[in-house]
Length: 107
Length: 405
Image (cartoon, rainbow over all chains, first blue to last red; front, top):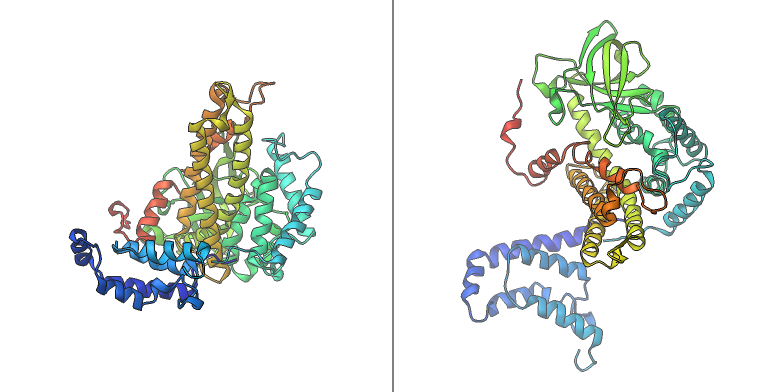
């Protein structure tokens, strides 16, 4: 019984924190507040490069097949940096719903 | 995040639970508020049961065998303590300071001689211990301790007074924080002594509480002689030793409290099902349901905080100031739960000792009154918030508590 985060998860958190500090500082967040879309394609692309959008997609569908807690750790850092964008609806909700209830062609 | 106990741990819990059911003293009723007619009877029952635990191999699970322990894991210790807390709290209460404070102090900071002399007699039920910190002029500001210990050859001569000392009236020995140096900074002049409570010059006077009980005492020391060999650590280390042992104590304390509160929640829900207000059970009332849910949430928060601290300690970490979170949680949550419970009982909630035939459970009356002390004892809520703020969050120090002479 050990309910603490393990070293891998702590490392994911550290990486995420550094990323948001560098890529989405408060200046970006405030600018996005006025923006029509609320996030930039550039930042979204960088987050995809970090693998975060693929975390909850199984390897069979081209994803990383990681645990919910791994994604949670990234999202905690996103919350800390108040990063706007459709991450929650895409990387978490859509991915989980498709895997839970989607047909093969939908997946 | 692994929440699971191993199959061996679960089996151990089963076996020990059955052992407890079979070995409780005859006539002991865990549902009763008080099973004993006098303090002497209570202390005797604690010692007898501790002796039974010891003989059956369940005492001091994770302490080394050379000191009378079982040399098993911390997790098994926790399982034992949690099971006992849930099944027979009253039987264990006289030993709360003994196991919670005296044992960590002696085990972590005592000399080999002190460990071999005192730990076995705690584990086998021979001794009950008390702890003397607070004084009339030293409460939250523990460093203000002025009970004086003056070196005279191979003894200290102790004069002074302690207050709010739990179980001093039942104790064989006490760990006492005393001042050995009046010239240096306040918190650097303190030392720890292991004191024989039956020594000449030690006078214990019980303090009666609002509940009618007398758990706490004043102790007066008049020229009490304590051998130098019974000082724990070096002179001037008293403060550091106190802080260290408080942190070790918190981890096991949180695990045990969580058990007690989980059991209390069960009891609260039963009361809410049985008690009717305006013609329907309390458990159907929307306002009371909110309170019940809130109580449950807080107890679960305490439980997982405890498990997190425990996880850290089992992996070999040293407990730190985050233990203050647990103390804050259980004390304040308990007060809310007790107050809400009285509210649920309605007008009958104001009747002390219960009216026959009403089915009213006086557990909540006693609990409500006793809970008032929770946010003061064992480090007040204000102190806990200071610790969390300064030492966990790294906020600036409280200006009024700068070290002074």
